[in-house]
Length: 300
Image 1 (cartoon, rainbow, N blue to C red):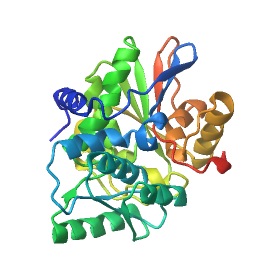
Image 2 (image 1 turned 90 degrees about the horizontal axis):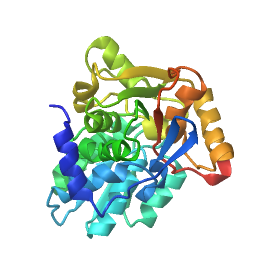
Image 3 (image 1 turned 45 degrees about the vertical axis):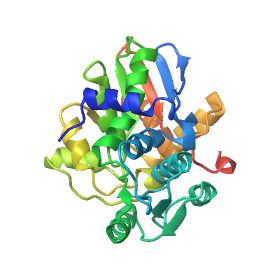
Image 4 (image 1 turned 60 degrees about the horizontal axis):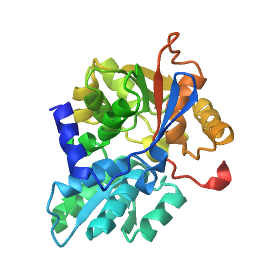
């Protein structure tokens, strides 16, 4: 199974009026930032959360999700808006600011497991017990298609776009972007060197488990790329890796140069350009997705 442009178009119609149309800013000639950090709940993930929830009929038990933080915040936001009960499982590496945000949105929060995969296993067990609707962080068609709506927006905002640079964790966003662009622009997939889920899968020819560590672990901490994402993007992306140091530098640059508050995952895509691991050709028109802003402002 793969995500298609038709799936993205259906998602665009379904979530209209629920997700924001986020702005792009041109920071230098031919370079844009797509500010998904200004989306409801602070990240692109609310798009997929609404698309999945609006396409299902949650029972009294509501919905359940496992998350490093941003997916949970998106699901909790969408659940509150739609009047649905939400239970969110997060790993111990989840940033305190995200846990506080989940509780402020009215979700029941369960902190369990050292990494995302362990929180996911616990959430699946709980969903089986209660009958709640499971909303996966990335490996569901409706979720990935919802994320792809931002790529459809980009093509309207920058019609002659050449390249989109996007961070990769579990792969829902990059799969949605590939589907939403539908071959009309190149996709550069950026991962931390210490969590190379997509690169390892591309090298192996199938999803494989990798170690999870580093500054991006709370938001890009999937230990395996989703099967849906892998099948959608294999052969359709340029894969690059960035160091933690490059991510930290890009995050500070976003704040100091553009007054954009981003978490480490939100700065990962920009790090690929600033560190030179992806160098655009002369005249190449490039959009960088700043995918999340759920961070402690004091650390900026």
